[in-house]
Amino acid sequence: MQAAQCQRSQLRQFGAVQTESISPSVRRDLLVVAAVTLATFVVSSLLELNERVIAFTRPMEAYQVDELPTTFVAMIVALAWFSWRRSRQTVEQANLRLAAQRELAEALTENRRLSQRYLQVQEEERRHLAHELHDELGQSLNAIKVDAVNIRDSVTGAPEVTRSAQAIIDVSSKVYEVVRTLLRQLRPVALDELGLASAVQYLADEWQRRHKDVRCRLSTEGELDNLSEDVNITAYRFVQECLTNVARHADARRVTVSLRRSCPTGGRFRLEMLVEDNGKGVDPAAPRTGLGLIGLRERVEALGGRFDIEGKPGAGTRVFAAIPLVDDGTKVNA
Image 1 (cartoon, rainbow, N blue to C red):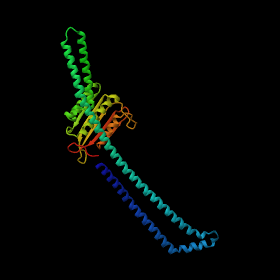
Image 2 (tube, helix red, strand yellow):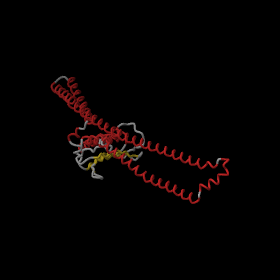
Image 3 (cartoon, helix red, strand yellow):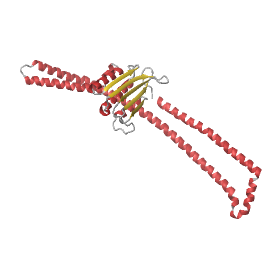
């Protein structure tokens, strides 16, 4: 609502600026018209121009040339009417354009609000699903593994039973690792328990462990552990998605991740996030078929932030985002 009021205020200011910029020119034009009219009257009076015209056109009355002054006056009046009609249409079109701009601003605000709500619901569903997997499936797998261990250790003289029990143990352990990976993807536990800085550090460490041929460097600056839930999860997903793209598409040998809480101007804090690599690069103007970066842009802009991608083929890629904050870390209304 505050964003919509702000945008309406900006549009009103824009209209006021337009009015102020037009009014002086209108006044000048009216002064020019008045000056030209007065000058014409003075010159015509001094030179008796009308009598001269009548005397000049009287011999050509057979050709109705003496009616030309009246015709010219009528044409001038018609042109004035034509100009008035066009000016009315211009004003109407300007009003329609301003109304369309207001409707577009309101629609963008509503779309941003709906996007933010959708992302909140999505994260709530992920959290619920992660808890269900941890509480139900995780405990069930642990119970299966414990029973298989008991069977393996209690049975003697039956190698087939021992091998089967060991196979169950191995499969249970493998499935549990898969579940743990899904849990980290659905909802980073470290984010809830340790805060943003530690969660991103753990994410970068795990990514480095899986991609040993790429050097990953993480740097953090400022207080990052008292941010709001929306900012925390957006920053975590930003780093997660960017590292995933580096692994899949960049063919890089170095990637740098930076999180910084700063206050550039005006006393408003913001969280700046940057991921750079030295891979094959991307063309920011090229159409994108994947939804990852589109989803990131939606997340950042839903919080009133800014999202930019810079890259050139063969020169690496730079993904930057900034989310406005207030002093306690909660998000500023867009």
